[in-house]
Amino acid sequence: MPPLLKRTLSTVALWVIILGLLYFFNDAGAVWIVAAIAALTLHEFYSLLKHMGYAPFNKLGITFGVTAILAPFYLARHGIETTDIVAAAVVAFSARILGERHPQNRVETLAGSLFGIIYVPVMLQYFVRIVMIHTPNQHTGVACFLWLIAVSKFCDVGALLTGMAIGKHRMAPEISPKKTWEGAAGGLLVSALVGALIAYAARHYLPPAFTPLKAALVALPIAVLAIIADLVESIIKRRATIKDSGAAIPGIGGIFDVTDSLILTAPAGYVVFSLF
Image 1: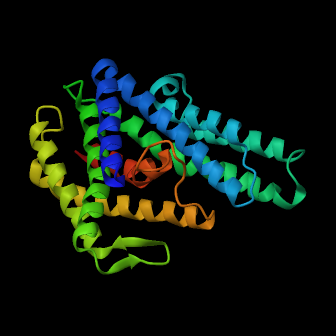
Image 2: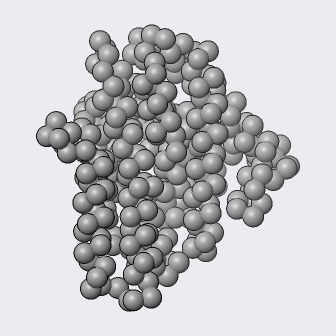
């Protein structure tokens, strides 16, 4: 099967799963989607660190990471915030590092374990905060959640197709040789178009002030952040001398290869929707 067809089928399958979970479980479904992808992404992130020669606390880190994701939705009412989970992780990792790992990589183990939690689940938990946005319409948070994911991921689609068609000028040859400025421009345009279309189609669910024109304009900086996040993942993989973060998704690679562009767009999206 051609790689592009595999990628297309995998993308469709992922969207079917996401929409199905949201249909049956609404905001709780969105929260557990984020928790699942955060756990899988963090696992692959720690695996990349292992390829670099480090030894992060994988299982404990994922446990803290998932808890950090769930904290705004389930624990905040009891006074426990994401920052409290991160603080607990610092304490736990610091205690473990005293008697574990080799002396020459204890600092890297501590740094890598903590950075993984901050870079993946702490950033992605902003999706949970978006889901929890309250308006008279109970579905607003989920609609905002879907809008942000679609704008972020369709930037990838637009960049890929435009780059394949007319891409000539490499954007970051030392980081990701296949990415071009033409592809990036195509990704921005597709994101703006998708953002406007969803804002129109879901106008009864999204905030009233979030018009298609405003949605298209907001989609542009969101798409820029998606491209930057994609490049950051490429830097990490290049340092680990790994092409893909995994092989979980046919035609795409690992979970991190899917979620990379969401890591920087999640907090930006939360700020945007908080303003609207």
